[in-house]
Image 1 (cartoon, rainbow, N blue to C red):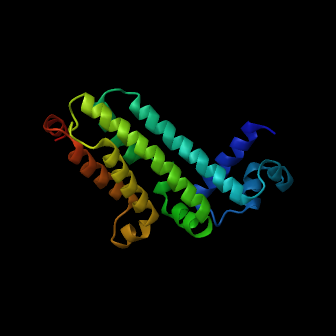
Image 2 (cartoon, helix red, strand yellow; image 1 turned 180 degrees about the horizontal axis):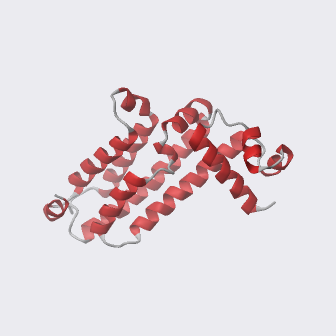
Image 3 (tube, rainbow, N blue to C red; image 1 turned 90 degrees about the vertical axis):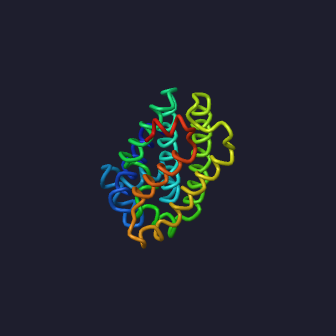
Length: 199
């Protein structure tokens, strides 16, 4: 069994899911897009459920790699700039596509919950590292409870994704929520010196 072929199926299925939603894309659709027989498909995946799980894991890996790339800068000021531009430009994150979230919540609740737990853990770790870097460079308040702050903001983000319908019912998008949450988060953690730079 080729891992490259398996990854190719996950990537192609993911592109269809992002474009059309998960529920409306069948295994037949995926096989047609790949030019592959269903028999060959089932060599790699036992079911659509398994494929969805693997697509979500690939998305977690993608998000994690993006966060690690952001941290590599080593400069808190550059990190903030990159993180904001990343938030605005990112379109390959399952959590930013309401149709995908809706389908996952309704038809794949177990996979969605596992995905949420994994994203929460990674995001919490990233925020904690982000805060430590800022404190070391004098731009984040030194008296901040790093672990609690990381849990708090990761939890807010996780709950907002789970209840995106509430946000949309008030006339707002996930993009607007991310931008506003980022602004509140940054202003809340910065030292006086950091706020001067931010403003």
